[in-house]
Image (cartoon, rainbow, N blue to C red; front, side):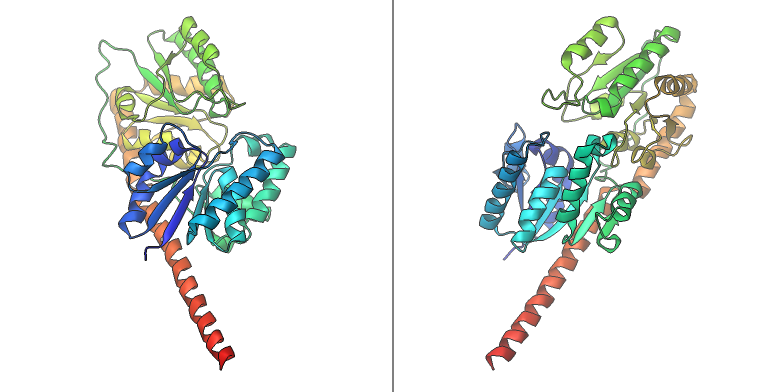
Amino acid sequence: MKQKIVISINSSWNIFNFRVGLIKALIDHGYEVIAIAPEDEYSHRLKEVGCKYFALPMDSNGSHPGRDLLLLIRYFNLLRTLKPHVFLGYTVKPNVYGSLAAHALGISVINNIAGLGATFIKNSYLTHIVRKLYKIALRKSSCVFFQNADDRDLFVNTGLARRDKTALLPGSGINLRHYPGEAPAALAGRPFRFLLVGRMLRDKGVEEFVAAARILRERFPQVKCQLLGFVDPANSNAVGMERISAWEDEGLVEYLGKTDDVRQFLTQADCVVLPSYREGVPRSLLEAAAMSRPIIATNVVGCRDAVDDGVNGLLCEVKNPADLAQKMQQMYEMTPEQRWAMGIAGRDKMRVEFDEQIVYQKYLSALGVITTTTLQKSAVDELLSKRINT
């Protein structure tokens, strides 16, 4: 009988865009994979990659205790019915409430702390509550993966996780075959393009990017600054479409909408920018580097893991549009050969440090440890049972 694995994230979109490779790898190694997430337009597509899907309503951005208690009950009932061998949790609520339900049912848990998000950035009363919940939820986990050493040290040093139960992953990994490295088109007859890829959130540095664009375009009006990503009106941290439209009317940026395939947009970009406040390891930077694009990012947790300053990109100060504009100008004034050299260095870095196979092997190793431990426990239980019966 195949071992059953449940993977749960706060949206089907997230699973489809970032975890399909892992799902396929697990299926190829003989596991049965079940995805649990709120239903959205990507839910039915999860079945196309070979996994089962169960809808789980979830207030991803809210903090109402009643709704969170209901989520815990829903997780418990669903996991009790599915009876998986292992629960894989991502994002805050699946990591907390899914893990609590799994532990209560004796299901092994592997967590992935992909990034700490706005809650940890603000260091509010809610931060205190979330940390307490994490501490309880992660206490019995078999393994807790982190995407950068800073986040792991934070959890270990504050007692949220045991170091011997933690491990590092190179982000969500990158498939270099899917992201070919191509030189950008010659600049003759077209504008130089800076592109920000990410959800339209303040914490992604969208406002700083636009402010830097305002500064840069006063000096170099031929430069084009573009935004690509999902606008989530339900997120309190979101930058709304009205504001984005106002920026477009002012001629500061061009909004490209959202996409399932960033490659066509990265091919047309000369430099990818992410002035985020904090990340796990940002997927957008990995994709850009894989396609041999130089990158500019803030010198913060997660972003600096993807950028070797002066080698495959540039680091700027967080929440500082003037410094970001200066780094964008520096990039613009480089020769095409210098930018291409950065792009090649970035692709090399992805191949050595961020290949998706590294992620898959670490998950398979963690699952192997769980399987071995389970078999050993079963053997001990069987032996004890025989001794008691005799």
